[in-house]
Structure formats: structure tokens, C-alpha cells
Image (cartoon, rainbow, N blue to C red; front, side):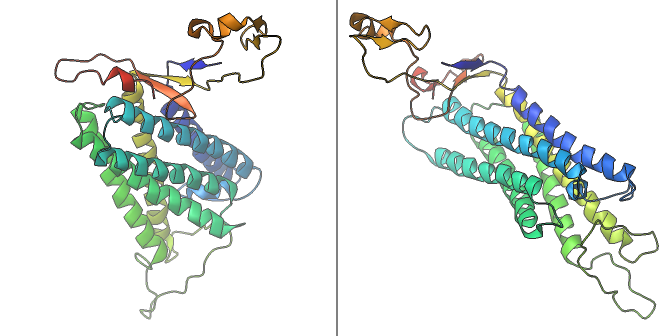
Length: 316
């Protein structure tokens, strides 16, 4: 049994749709319930309490699963396109490392979905840090491969756009951490002393005359900018996948012989022994080589400068 997916480029788009639904549904609900001000809560505030936490978590979990699939396909795609089946150059090792980092990013996103920020803050914290830091490392690693390897899966202008977005994401993360973990942008009182700050146990809400108001706005704005720019980055991977197709879930029947025949998994009928021994009549597709989950194939056009990879490596 096999499933051919010709529109594999839709997967990054589906991931972004789920993620955006999670972020903005939570935001809309807590603003509508007057639990926070429109400008501007943390993203995780939208999943801090029921019922919005259920919606937030459900869509973010689905986004995390799709992101893990995209990371896996991206890994196979690079191996196929750059013909890594011969020797094992540093680029192949980097691709393997990025696969693990991408999985951690998706897992961190799932932790954020399942561990609410005030209920289980330690789980939420490690999930967010894993998603942010590993996500940025993954993005920069993909950019390095795109710049250094030829032929390129994406046009040069798109690579430059990705670099610009990655710089924005990196600066946003730095600003977010600086303002969240320091007293930067906090106004001193009339005596020149720094006001006391205690870690919140509920959604933070400050009036414009609060010494923490500016700091809070900068912190939350940096977080939104970080997350949205990373999602735009993942969205651009659709371009790279447009010339690839995917075969998903191949299965071979390995049961015992019954009366000299074997069950045909497509028709559920017995086959004669002579048919079984004929490779052209075997009921299932060949086992996947080197990968237990899926096959991916390059279907795009090639040029004289950028030839098609060796046919032995097209199906991985």
C-alpha cells in the first residue's frame, strides 16, 4: 500500500495555517473576554486558561506534528537533490544534525502547547526555549546549505529574503530575552530606585503609568515578531518542495505460505507460487531503501549546468 503525495509543497503552508490559528485564536479570545489589553499580551497568554487553552493547544500540537514532517521531508529532499549516496561529505553530516535540531524545534512547540505557562511553567519554559533557539539554529543551518551548495533549490533572491528574515528573528530573540530577564526599559521611581518586580502568576496587565509598561510592550512585541518571522521562514520552504513528490507508507506482506500461495494484499486473493517468485507480480511495492518512513523523488526540470542527481539516489 502506498500513498503518492504530489502536492508536498502544501505541508509548510498547512503548518503555518495551524500555527497562526493557534496564536490568533487565543489572542482574540482573551482580548474579547477582557483578560488582557489588545496591545499586547504574550503569545502564550492565549493558552493560559480554559477554554482558549484547548483551542490554542490543539492547533499548536497539529502545527508541531506537521513541522516535524516538514523537517523530515526537508532532510530527505537535500539528500536526494545533492546526491549524497556516494561518499559522506560534511554537508551530509550537517543535514543529519539539522534533522535532529528540527525535531527538537517541533517537540518544543508541542511542549508549549501542552504545558501552560502558569500551570507547569518549567515545561512551558523549556519548550519555548527549545522552539526558539533550535528553530533559529535550524533556519540558519538551512541558509548555510543553500548558500554553499549548488545547484540551488531556491533562487538567489529568495535566499537573500531568508537571510533578512533570519536576521530579524535573531535580533527579536535577543531583544525578547534582554527585556524579559533584565530590568531594561523599566522606569525608576522618584527616588531613583528600581521598582521591585515579582514573577507573574497570571496574565500580565499594566497601565500606561506603570514603570513596567514599556518593558512589557517591548518584550511581547519582540516575541510576536520572532514567532511570526520564523513562521514566514518555514512558509518559504514550499518553494523548495514544489518539484518534489512523496510516497508515504509502503507496506509488504510477509506472512506464511498457504497451500502453495500467498495472500495478495491488494486483492486479498491467493497467488500461485510461480506468480510469487516472479518479481513483476509481487503484490506489494519494494521496501524503502535507507529510510523507514517515506520515499521522495525529484520531479523538476534540470539544465546542463545543474544536471539531475544520479537516478540511483532519486528514491530514498
